[in-house]
Structures are given as structure tokens and as C-alpha cells.
Length: 299
Image 1 (cartoon, rainbow, N blue to C red):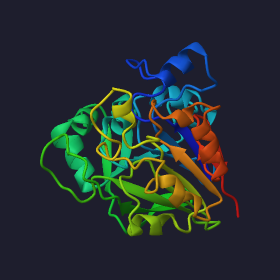
Image 2 (cartoon, helix red, strand yellow):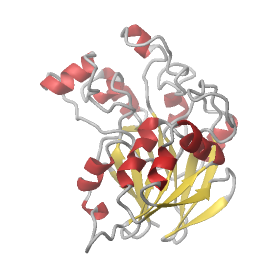
Image 3 (cartoon, rainbow, N blue to C red):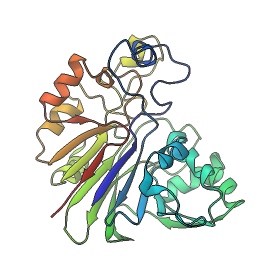
């Protein structure tokens, strides 16, 4: 199984267009070593011929062009087979509209996510006006063949984040995916949004070979400290990395071969290659993803 990190930043990317925080200033000016990043998404394949996209970021065109394996063949034949969504957040779904030139799109999403895309944001209705959309309902806990030698099992990720689009289904608002290469038995977990590492969520991570996990903020009050927002990381649905209840301590204890932070906010100091926070993460055996990072899981 191959996993390609197409975008490693949280919503807004890095640097964010309207942000002058120390990180964004540093990457713009080159004052500190740091790489620009696009918004969160990965591509997964068991054969490097057929690829499955996890979340469709607004930066999808740039991401496809930056990865030759995703570029079209003759005519408009594309190696992209389907899109799987972890939630209905705009930074994970706006890219669907950029797929409208396709003859058809196969979309895997929970009923709750589909409801938001239809009734609230109208993204799905708009896409359906341009091309055929086949919806495959994601049912947490169900083992599902994906094709191309891959299967997945989604798992529910509890969240108390305010539903921006009003009342709706609560179950299935956010999911993670456990991916299995049917030939080798190797597994990877994709979890770009998690508010709390509950026992049930930790159980999904416990024996994964590669874990790609939410690394949005370093401090819970990071945005407040910088005067950029009045919400904590947890208020936004994301467990911070640091602190006694943060994600780093939990991830460091897991036996996975690769443990990688994705969905990293522009304010997070781990984005700076020379920061103490980056060194702390790496000393705990966890990596910080950059766009273009590839992981190969072999037998």
C-alpha cells in the first residue's frame, strides 16, 4: 500500500492568505526554515495504478498536478477512482466542485456528511448538476471493499464541535478510516480530525502500521494566545499536541511503524523546521507531514 500526503495543512493552508502570525511571516520571508503547505488530503493505492482520494481540498488541482501518478492518461482517463470524506468541513469538500468535469464521481460519505453537503452547503447538489455522482454510504464499523486491493473500515469520532449548519444528524459527523491492503494485510489509519482520543478511538490506532493523525494545534489556546480567535483547539474539534492530555504522549506510546501528524494549522510551531516543538515531536518518534510525503507499507 502506498500513501501520498497531497496536503498537510489545516484549512487555509500555510501560509494562510490573511494571516500575519509569526509562522506565516517566517515562511513568506524565509526568515526561518519552513515549507509551504496546501490543505489536508491524502491519496492511497495498493497498486500505484488506481488511487483513492481522502478528502477533496480546495487545492486539489495543484495537488494532482504535483503528483504524476494522479495525472490523466489518454483523453480524460484518470487514475482517481473515488473520494472518501471524513467530514463535511469546507476544507475537505470544496475540492469536489473542482471535479465537476469528470464523467462521474464515486463518493463515500456517512449519511450525516451527505445530508450536510446536500441541504446545508449545497456542494453535492451543485456537483450533481455537472456530473453523475454515485454515493456509497459509509457505515462506521463495517468492513467495506474499496477496489484495487484495498478495503476500509470507518469508525465514528465523537465531537462536541458546534454544527455550523444547524441541527442535523450527530452520529457520523466525523469519522476516521482504517485502510487495509488485502494482499499484505498491512494497515493505515487516517484521522485528520479528532477532539479526544477516547478508548474506542485509541483501539482503532493501537495496531495500525501507519497512523496519520490530527496535528492541528500545539497548544489548546494557541489561537487565543496569538490574538487570532476566541476559540480553543478543542472548541474547533481538534485535540492539541502538547500537554498531559494532548495527543503526543498517547501517540508516542503506540507501536506503529510510522506516526505522522497531518492537518497542521498555520499557527502551529511544529511547522518551523528549527523549532523546539518540532524537535520534541521528533524525539517522541512522531513525524510532521509535508506535502509530497510518501509512505510505502510492504509485507
